[in-house]
Image (cartoon, rainbow, N blue to C red; front, side, top):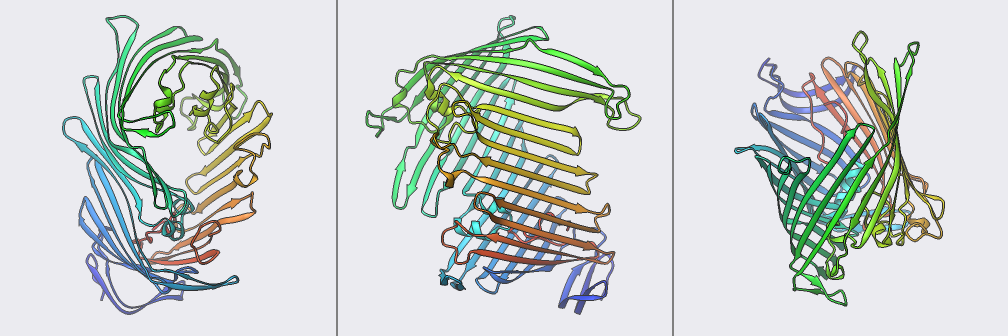
Length: 589
């Protein structure tokens, strides 16, 4: 029975694609309203997995009103049990939010592989994901997010997206911000837990964190600017290893006034000088043996800094006959940053949890380098006026520290926390970015060890887009082996990955495909490989996906790899749904 602008009732229905029967449905109650948001049952999604067996996902969509909707889904797995998913979404004016919850009830399952028979115990787990963006009265705004799971093993084996599957931290938090007449208030609650394995983890966060600041303003009508920041935070710091718990939670009060004097008389040479004083109180401290005491400690120091840019050298090249740009401009920008941090007498008593706790006193830093920028003046749209845009930038940076301990905590360099020993010199950092057109974006970052004359790390990322029909991205990253440098001398820890993804579809989205893989070059292992495709006809459509996922290195998984297959239909272009674990993601629904 077909009822236009209402619901369609089908009995003993067979769905055909190009005359080929693909799905039998004994009963289907489906919305066929002109409004594409209609309450009703969604077409089921079928899948199969080596780990979980045959899968069937059924969904019910509830169009609550024009600003809210919800989806309830049931999942059946022939080998391990069943699951339930609930999703809620809303969008009111400038406020929006979404929440997805998933519960998986797994019974005991036995697997036979080349190495023998393994039994996976029964487990009930849940996963919560969501975000909130809410406008409040009084010029205030609220944000919240959650990405929390109860079982690290289930998280690593259930998700089809390799980035979700490899995620080893769970977190939730939110904040409220407001600004009035140059003053700002930020209240935050955040709790984040990182897992090293199934029995060991580290807990961090602020519960709560309240920051109050005054924005920069001229001081008494002079060219000197004054600003102020302050913060109260209860810091979470706890590590677990089996039944052993090491707790270093404490409260920290921080106050930082700053004055700044910018010298901008010449465009080709600028100096930005600042001076700030920091007073920090901690409710807990360390004794001479690094044992935690419930005794407070106060820390005071000042930092003076001068950022010098220039002299800047520019040259313009006229290219009227070039088919790419009318003019090119090359800019050479040398820079030098001088920073002096006063001595901190009681630094050895500070419990280091965050970056500001690890500041090394009695240190002068010289950060120096040069940036090269190339601009092209060209018209992006035929017939429109030309405009200049940066197409290539190349930067080289290095820092010298009078106190070599400061090199261990410099967040400007990716390898500062890699375990390398203290040094007066940071690695030489190279950063390159090229955007010759709107569709091409290439970036390269590398760090070179000046003592051993060897690369520490390299990351190359390239993305390409053509008229929204072709999207491609490639990422290559490598941590190099340096036998004499601690932190880089272990071949088993020198990661080397190659990641790529390509999405191609027709202009009308009738036909398309997606292919991606993650390859571990060091171990010659394909970590994940995924291929999916879809075809949409006038009456109906079909989407399929195949994925292989390598479980090597994940403890407690009874099989070495999982092979997954998913199949989904769409009817009359009204759309469908994707399972909670990310299957069929990236395929137009």
